[in-house]
Length: 74
Image (cartoon, rainbow, N blue to C red; front, side, top):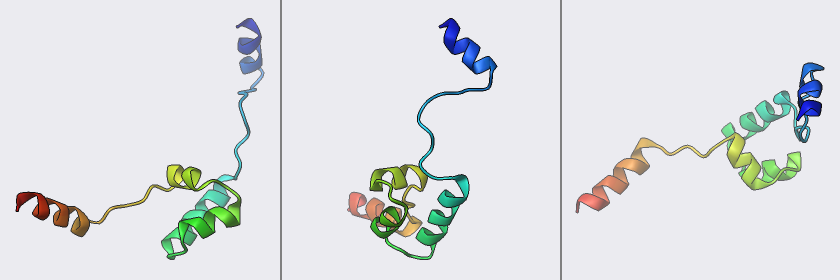
């Protein structure tokens, strides 16, 4: 544990380096916003589809939620 503390004091945080830079993740988000399929964006940036969902979760619309509520009430 002393070695880890010494490394942190030197500014080393350890762990695996990120696959993409912040700018690349932002660009991936813009592609998704333009309607590019997630699978294609994942292939472009060579990341797993699950990783893409972690960084840019799918958004549900209010209409989808309202439809589900209406189905439950019936």
